[in-house]
Amino acid sequence: MAIETQSNRIIQMQKVCKRYGALTVLQNLDIDIESSEKVALIGPSGSGKSTILRILMTLESIDSGRVVIDGESLYDIHEDSTGSSVSKQQVSRIRAKVGMVFQSFNLFPHMSVLRNITEAPIHVLKLSREEAEQQAVEFLDLVGLQDKINAYPAQLSGGQKQRVAIARALAMQPKIMLFDEITSALDPELAAEVLLVLKNLARKTDRTMLMVTHQMHFAQEFADRIIFMEQGKIVEQGSPEKIFNHPQKERTRSFLKTVLEAT
Amino acid sequence: MTEIFSWLPILLSGVKTTVLLTVGAALIACPMALIFGLARLSSHPSLYLPSACYIEIFRGTSALVQLFWFYYVLPHFGWKLDAFSAGVLVLGLNIGAYGAEVVRGAVQAVPREQYEAAQALSFSRQQTMTRIILPQAFVAMLPPAGNLMIELLKSTALVSMITLSELTFKGQILRASTLKSTEIFTITLLIYFLLSLCISGAVRKLERYVSYAKG
Image (cartoon, rainbow over all chains, first blue to last red; front, side, top):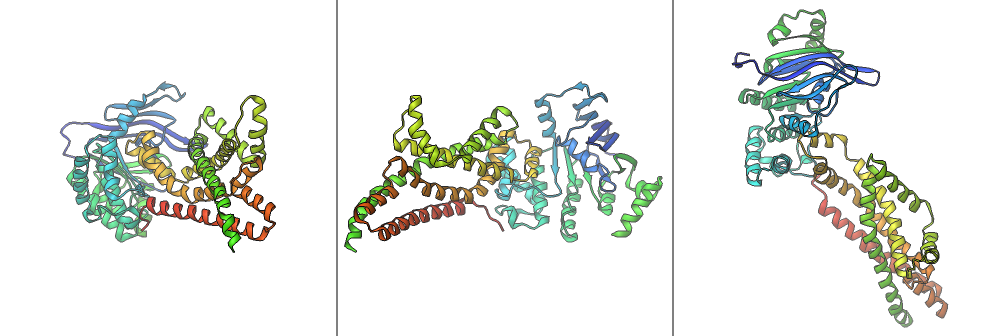
């Protein structure tokens, strides 16, 4: 974390609570993330990891707490549900700073690979078609798929689809990239090709990246910081070296033992 | 055999009316289906309630009685329609109601994840509909819409009941004057069949044109 010259929090979540009916998904969660930091969220299923990403992508609201992204308030809701509401424009401004890659790829099946990548830059960012296409070619090159530019999603393997999805998210030039279990739907070989792309990406850009993953070895290599969560709370966090080699909490130890033995 | 040829001009003049009825009603049905199908999906009562009423009323009552109502009852309220207009209007509204359900089903069949992906890319709600959801829904709409078009063609025969001389009506007139029921109604059936083949062929062409590569 030596790259930061100044402490620059790009994501702040304070006392965030999220419930689905009777089920509490996040409990008074506090997370601060520095600009250009690479963070991996790990933990058992249902621990609320993906919910954090979905809240930051504005796909999910919260019940109480405060969320600030790049200096702009997304939520500020007190425990009695009162609080300042955020204007639609502000939400879309915040949304434009964040990009997300999904577990199930979610490419647009009726568009070619090229159009999947250029559609939003042309119609949302109002880039010219030439600019958008030129940029798309660069991103496709980055994910190693230049030869698939005219293919349709259904003609691609899962790993290729996920790489297109990464290029599509990058094309919107987000400051923050969220990766939600992006290799969980892939067999190990295809997962490896996606992780390789991600590793290069992490090395090349100073984007803030937040990933939810079950691939412990990858988290170890990719992340500056590991956050281990369970039942909507942070159990332990720290550098990969600390979490994987010297975990302080018994729960972290037992989780890592089980997961690492299985793989 | 020669008398069959003497019937043909009469039947074909009926075919012309049948085709005009079908095309006219389709021109009403398509926009009705799209507008009311989308309105049905809205969470706004002022949009979905009128839509639900329209769909349920036209789906839930007999098309023949609707025709009688538009042709014989509406004049009592000062709105007189000729048989052709009443036929086009009733058939159009009728098929439009079924079509609205087709549109609704096709839009609902697009996975929720597509909306989320669009939102993550900052598309506006309107852009999400026109660029992401409707193009996918349209492909899913086509086969059931083709079905409805054939259904529409065949239900034009109902309009003979309010004195419009379309294909079935002409067939009945010929039968009355020649008493050759077998020949005349067989030919009439054949003509309907050929017309419906044209529709299904056209729909299949359109399907092939709009469908994207499925791997």
